[in-house]
Length: 395
Image (tube, rainbow, N blue to C red; front, side, top):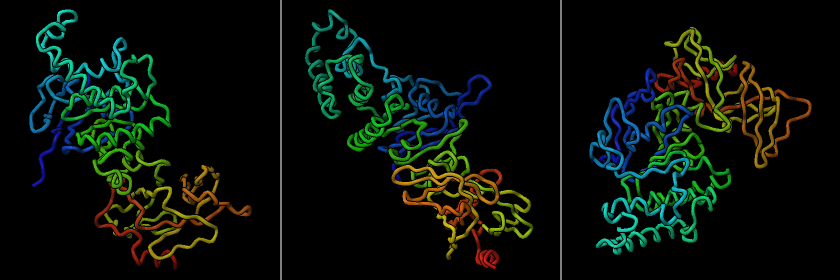
């Protein structure tokens, strides 16, 4: 029997006036899991996170944390810690004081927190010592002990981000909620810091929900990725499954850089889908007369003037228009005979012949993806480039 989820959303909906920002979102997040919510701006990912934190109310549905229904609980009673995009540090307090704030609020009574009388109240000194130990320990783990006496204005963006993380960690919450915490950092620091966050997550073993619009962050950091668009969940799966095996054309298009290549395939009366003259799939009688979409990743094809398909491959004509050199590799930009623009990854030593810009693009059948007019992935009842189709192609 599997363990109950640490966080559970059940049919969560949120409206802003006439706009439905979240459309019946249901999602389970396991204890200790790192889940990334990813999608374009305005898809509802930050709204879902803020509802989980208790910073926004929901209109329908339920939320539970560690088996407890928290739908009606205020933010302070949910035992989660949030790291904001802006870090939300108090500018007049030092890093030490900023990190201590949640412990002061939790461990001291109202009298002990008073600015002048508080230090003289019974038990205050012992609480101060425990808080100082905790802050110091977390600061050491984040390698920011030397920053504890600085104020936010005296720190870089990366240092402020670590302090904001430290403030969340000292609470030892049931879950960490992160709303695009790296978006204010430069590219090099962002790559370094996301590695630190993943290492920190593994050390703490805490459940983490991470919102980002950066697909590279989501794929490189998360145990699972939840792709959102227009207030709904499109797919929740491992990063590899999201990339290699998307359920919907919108997931396939959003994930991947360069983007997935898509081409139109006409389905004839024989139930066979063709990309120009090339047979792609059969068994599609239900889609007779429809136009399907064939998708393939930029790294899945090979091109050359004399390239020929082998077993389990198909070939289409490709016209090269531009070669973009990227150091370790290059991107070949061009068009298919059917008119669609495509981008292909090639080796850094790829040099097109001076006398030819027209190539054969050879594609492995098993890496082609076929999408219905609705955008849904076609999987069952379809044979990609069936044996008789391959014979027709070569014949």
